[in-house]
Length: 120
Image (cartoon, rainbow, N blue to C red; front, side, top):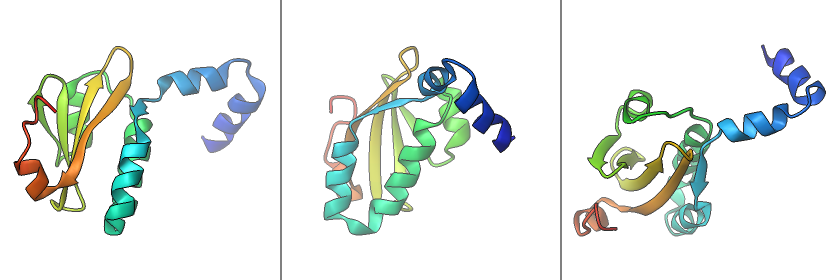
């Protein structure tokens, strides 16, 4: 299977564009990077989430909830992900048609308790 993808990526015109379009665009990685620079223990889990989510093929809420057992939908196409157990929370707003995800919030559990998740 790996060989087939390698062949397609190198030999078939426009396949790289197709693969790129299948990915979820996440805005903005800088927010995540700034957070893990302050909380170094979260870096690996955030990068793992970023890579997995970016490569996901999410067409609906069900797809996200099936892939992430610790995730929950909070309405308005927003999802809360638990990072590093339950130490940190990540709120993402998803547009399924555009295959785009916006980072709305990342913070500690106590910071999360102080915000209005639908207005942030």
